[in-house]
Length: 401
Image (cartoon, rainbow, N blue to C red; front, side, top):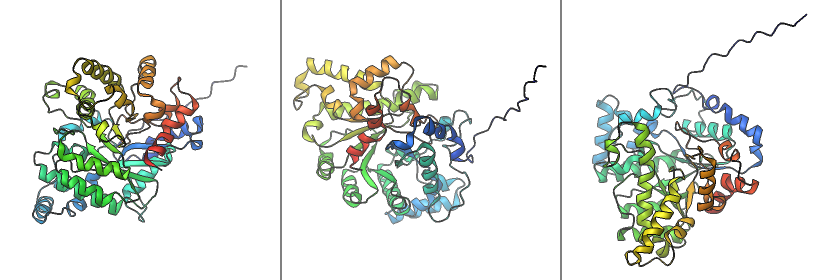
């Protein structure tokens, strides 16, 4: 007698909302932990985010300028929705990152949190770290990474400095596993230098950050004291890319996909070109530079392009003593979003950048295109040591963890 096939009751498709628990969303990451024995690895996530707009009134309250602070607080008091937007330049249309409302968890991390001993953001960061088997997580803001596009530079400076006060007072220091590279108010070189001097000794601050979406030459002379200070203190400088659908290049693009693919790369391409060709690598040879959230596919292109142009016009770059690509190989790059559609191209890219010694794992959680550590473990051409280096050992050396 043939035994009847057991009846299977399908599990209903789960809708991910702003209130879905982080641990549910990352359930597959826990499977990776068991599959790849990730608890045996030292893993540093060099790029992750929290939603600072959830705490916007507290940030506004820390604005140094009393007139601007009062203006922001009056906005919050009287304007609907200003408790998440006052004084900011946040573009509502950029919620296209939520994929037409289908992936909402980065719009607001509104999941229930019952713990009261620490700020809820600390609890949410811990949930993500535990789910992905991460030992150290570098946490950045989200919308404020577009602060360089603010039409009023003096407001941008005040907002970012207020955020830094709030973040170091409220989030950092509550868990030694949570670190950050504090954003620099780059519109103001003097304020940027002041920021480094004020926070460089904070145990949770392991470097400083330029939000890359901005129209400013990173090679300008007024920034030299800032770079000298960072080099002397042994603190890395990161350039974190971001989206922009309004510049001269992306404004003709009618899809978020198009602007996202291009704008996250071109901002860092511009700053890297100015950095290399103007001899910053010669002037500050011991300053470690990191290019964040641009993926890797653009790097070999830039190496070839800049090397070719330099060979033809060396007089335009008199400070250089070697090829532009040689300076680029001395830099560091984060892995996310890792372009994995062609492993042959990816392997060539890893070889070009010496990924085993320069690549830093990053999740970009909770963005819609985040990468779990299993992404690195699944790359077939990497050696065991290369995987360990990329997942955490390169970051351990870079940040002196």
